[in-house]
Image (tube, rainbow, N blue to C red; front, side):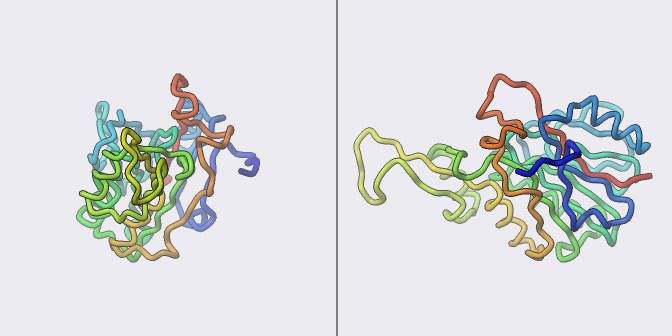
Length: 242
């Protein structure tokens, strides 16, 4: 990961969109920094209590209380949609023709529940967003080489319709049963969510990666698996400037 002067990463293909502000924060950026950033742009940040769910909130105005869920969407200028992560995948969706944005928190539970798919469909229902017009930015998350999960997670993904290719199996010789030895699987969060976007009709050229870095390996990023006692989270955001 190259050193960035700003405490957040942006996607070059999204930067020219008029009125759009977006970014994927790193370990240097606190909630106080985010609040100051929003205030300087005349924006109100919306920070959910995240549940690892498949709940999507449509915001037609600033919420009066705390929201619970894992995806936010709006076409209202002045609202800064915020997702907090420390290994999970943050995804920002932008519909330039209809002036709408969404921010989605894709952990393994949300991904298995097809949260990103539901967010794309919700954009279409609310604002007329067409998958072919959407742009999706995938932020830093834990990489497949470090994201070990159990058989129950793999089975849940297969039941949800995901291809086996989003996992790599390790722990035994394929086809050889060893009594008492449990196989482990490596989950590729980005591959699973790219598969969802591809199935919805998003153009591959409109799906961007903010950086092929692993949160578990990169010390400039926060990782729950690397430091489970660290309460800090990275702040990822998207919104329309008023």
